[in-house]
Length: 238
Image 1: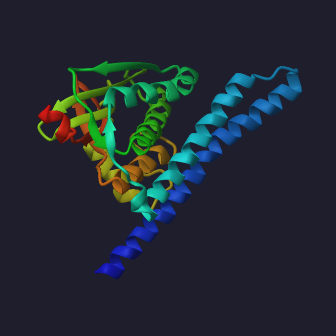
Image 2: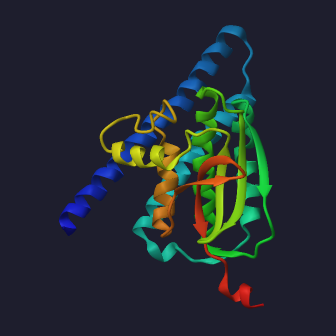
């Protein structure tokens, strides 16, 4: 059983690497086309090129972080973290990409919560990676407004931090099917995105390394994905 589990983990790791490689083709092609157009017209949109390059670099950094956390659990030093602060920084990191895709970002904080115990760098990297994939997916969908909410709310299991939109494509069924198809197809999230969906799987890998789960959830009648975090017990006693 252990050998079978290791073989499955190895296949998923290899597939995630392939997903990341497929995903990186998109920004690299965009940069190449921008450079080609610049040579023809004498005008180069350096801001767009920088934004595209930053998106690619963030995906690589997040992938590398997930691998490090998986191989070296001692790096998972937990600390009291403000979820609202992480969501704000996530929005800042996603701002340029969201504008390039015509997606509006909204910060939605329902209630006041104390800090949670988590690995801040890992949580932010997971949310940024997830957000990048959802921003890319929204414009290709029929019907939903091009708005992505970065939100937190309390559930019976803990404090939820996630990203949400007005589309029923962001569901547990979509995520579950994508996980099942991840090792066998180049587009496992076909109902959500026409790309490899690497950002979602990288977020999934980071959260798994942090002993957290990427789950589908609802927020203010919106659908999305997030993770459940546990409040700092010491702060609860104050």
